[in-house]
Image (cartoon, rainbow, N blue to C red):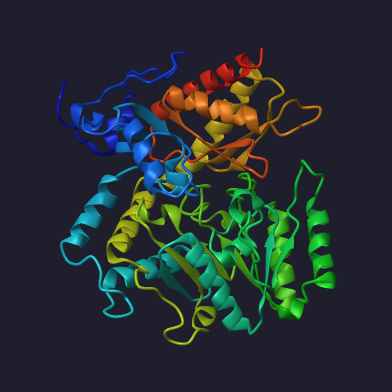
Length: 470
C-alpha cells in the first residue's frame, strides 16, 4: 500500500474506483493510502474531542471527519471514500481543490495574504469586482462590495437599500433562507433550528407568501398576499427592498415561478422598492446560468453572492447598480477580512474555470440527467414516494412523502435514505420546510461516471429505507 496520495488534479475522477457503491454491506472499506487513512486519529476520537470542545448548536450532518478530497470525492480520516453530492453546501461547483483555483491561491500567498482593503487596497479585489460587474445581468453600470460570508452580504445589501431609498422596511418570503445573524434571521422564513429561542428579531421586516403546490398557493395567491401585506402591515412607501432567492435553498430547492419574479419586478418599480436577488446558493452556474434570476429575464437592483464564487474559499459580496452602491458614506461599508486577497485570486480562477470548462452548459445537461434518473429510480424502487422532482439546472431536489394521496411529508424516510447512503459512500443533505427533500449539489466538474456511481448508491439507499418499513 502506498504511503502517499497521488495528486492528479480533477482527471482522477474520470474513472470511478471499485467500492461498496452498489453493495448492501453496511460500510465502505476502501483504504486509499496510509496518508489518507490517518493513522494518528480516527472518526471516533474526533467525535469525542468535538463533543468536548465545540457547542452542540454547531451541527454536522455526517459523523465523519475529512482527510482528503478531490473534485467530487472525499476520504475521511478512517480511509473511507465518499462521493460528494453536498459540495460543502453548494460551495464547490468547481469541485474540491480545483487545480487552477489552488494554483491561483498559492500564487497569491507568495505575495501577501492580508492587508485589509480598508487600509492598503490591492488589485485582486478590483479585478474581481470588475469581473462580477461584467457577468451580472443588466446594462446599467455596476459596482461590487466584497465581504466574507453570505449573511454579511445580505446584511450589507439591506444597508445599501435603506441608505439608497431612505426607507426602513424589508420584505422577505416564506421559506427563504438568508443567514443566521440577527437581521438575516429576521428575514429567514424557517423557525427550527435557525430562529428557535433567539428572538426578538429586528423590526420592519415583513413576510410575504411564496407559491406552494403542496399548500395550494398559486402565483396569483402569493401576489394577492403581498398586496394585502401592503394594506395591513408594510406601507409601500416605507419599504426599502424585497429580497428573494430565485431558487429556495434551505426552503426546498423550489424555483420562483418566472411570472412571479416578473410581477415582483413590476411591483417594486411601481412603489420605488429595490429588488434583491439572493444568489448565495443558486449563483455561479448551479442552475445553468451565472445567476438563477437570469432564467426569468428579470434584472434585480442588487445581487448577493457567496458560496461557489471562490471555489471553496470564504468570500461573499453584493453586486448592484452603481448609483445604489454609492449611497453609503465612505467607511459605511467594508470589514477587516472583506475581499481577502487569497480568496479573490481563488474566485477569479473559479470563474475562469466555469467559463473555460463550459460548466454552465454542463449544469443544464447534468440537471436534465439527474431529473431523469431520479424519475427512473422513483418509479422502480419507491412508487408513490417521490412526490416531486424539481429544480433549475443542476440545482435539483427530490421530495419524499408517505404516499401520493395524502402527500404527507416523510422526513423520517429522508433521514433513513441519507443514513444508508452514507454507509455506502455517498454524502447527501436534506432541505425543505418539512425536512423531507434531498438536494443535489454535486460539483459540476464531476464526471458522468462518478455521478452515476452516486446515483447507484442512492437507489440502494432508497431500497434499504423501504425494506426497513416492512
